[in-house]
Image (cartoon, rainbow over the protein chains, first blue to last red):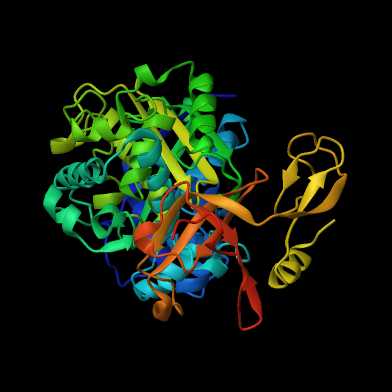
Length: 384
Length: 127
């Protein structure tokens, strides 16, 4: 495999928009191409993530639509759908296309539009990523899935609701330094603890919001990247899966797909968790961040909640997690999330993240989880 | 082989069906093509007792569209006595008594002709 670099990144403001997902992607892609300093005509393929376009926008075939709206109607393009991990899955496959020598410059990204429908509609559509016959018929929701994880983790490790709340407080604090974040205001532990129950023990402020937004990155071969201004190298990109049904997962306090994807990524890069300086991971719910920090090997099993509470995962702490504000504060436009996490890590490794910069960051990790923990992508990045 | 449709028809009649691998003895519910333990395709039908204990649980307060009149409702992952697990609604158990390890018993929940997996109190559930 050839070396591959990210040479440009772009992200829209996250929040509520009155534009289509394709328009949001096009804005992010134009920013990424300008950042890369390459002409749109240099793009040889588009790998695209979009999840609920069929439901919220009555739109399938979203990848050629996105390419057309961008003004690149002829590039080969495919939509990836692995629930919330879609554009990270797209990224991994794009890296393989460039790494294998098929293409030299590839655009990767995603977009989502959900705030044009009601919360109960989007709750239904997100639940489509659970099994239709065995789980949707129960009225299982995504907060419900992670509530089951939370209860199991609390029982096994003594994790507390206050420790989960500390994740929300920390990510909101980080979000205040991110001008693209949906929420740019601090919250208190008390506000989290007193917010309304969504799925016991998860409360409203344990949950990331519904979000409209787009994100894009430009990747390139080493030869092209050497001419770019600020290439950040892809050191690894790995995927793993797990059983679809909650009933088939033997230990709900863990996410085995995270552990498997992380092991594969560390092996590809020849690195370990101790080498990582900054992490963007999938905090769709506060407990998801706690379990992910453990599954990635950043902390021992059972220490994820302690790490948040003690400030170890804050910018300035020993293992900064989600300096962008994470899904919790930055927002979670599901098809765009993986690409947006990569954009943040690239920005961090360029030492260009302003008030949320992790000092001296040289190696960064992105982790994106799909739906009911059945899909996980982990990638590693490094600077020269 | 047991199809999904057959499983839920049996469930509606009160029978909790599963399959056991004729090669290695692994139990599976729902059925899959290959045995995940030994890759054999030698499934034999079996019936579970319906007895299990709660492995994790939640009470859903914000429901998907069409279920607003059902909230709040409890969902639990249940470890069945025979060693497999199933997700289901928990009914007739007060929310405040839900806990990990609580014994429950399979109970089909049929609405508009469609059966879903449910659990209610078992003979072992403390009253």
